Amino acid sequence: MPFHIIEFKKGTMFIRKANYNDLKELVYMLVQLIPIGYVTTYSDIAKVLKIPPRLVGKILKENTESIIIPCHRVINIKSIGGYTIMGKRVDYLKKRLLSLESKGDLKRFNLAGYLGIK
Image (cartoon, rainbow, N blue to C red; front, side, top):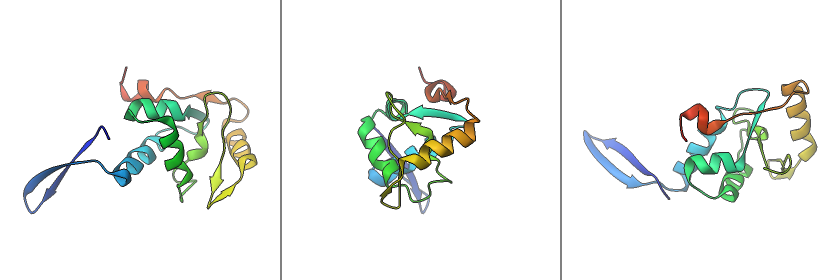
């Protein structure tokens, strides 16, 4: 993984390689930046973190807080993509949530631009 984590314990600084849980936390934080009525792609998130888009999808599929961490706002580059809640595939719900949030005018959120990444 391309990240290192800096931790402080008892006044001492430790640097360690990021693990899967650290990466999940980063993906979830990025997803929470997507405004209501906007979407971004698995690829956009993957580019920011320098990880494969499929890994972003795997992480979001494990999301157990689907409204707090609005993974329905992350779409496939060619289509709306799938949607899973608590292990159950509910693609129709993703479409409905996006329709409600966007009021029929869904916009693309430039995540990298928002973060100042070229």
